[in-house]
Image 1 (cartoon, helix red, strand yellow):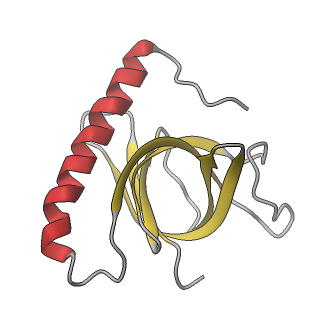
Image 2 (image 1 turned 45 degrees about the vertical axis):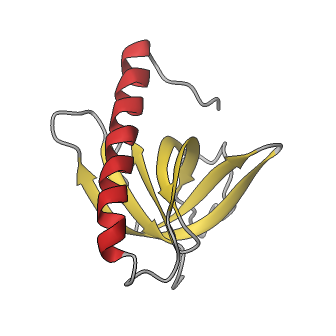
Amino acid sequence: MSLQTSSEWQARGIARILESLSRSDGRTGVQYAKLREYERQSLQAAMWVCTPSPEDPVMREDHPTTVQAWCYSVSRSGIGFIATTPLEASIIGVGLILPLTIKWKLARLVRCRKIPQEEFWEFGAAFDGI
């Protein structure tokens, strides 16, 4: 599976949405900083998301449920990202693409919303409590 956008139109939409979410996260970050245990960092990068199951528990890019996603914010306790499809599971595998490897981590979905007038969904996932 390769990380590619289907068109230049989609690539521009992804960049626009990620920038908008990063700006919004920056504005609310000041307000909620004292309540958060870990500092958030803006990170605009492609990533993988899969839904591990008891029958196929290994998180990997060629897992049958793996979808491409794009990150806009990350901290030690969670991640914000977008994808073109809604996710049904409450526990997901998040694959952050690093130089020479993919770092997989289990996460619990805490936010899922359709972005108005767009073909994307926005998600928040927590790494803690799993």
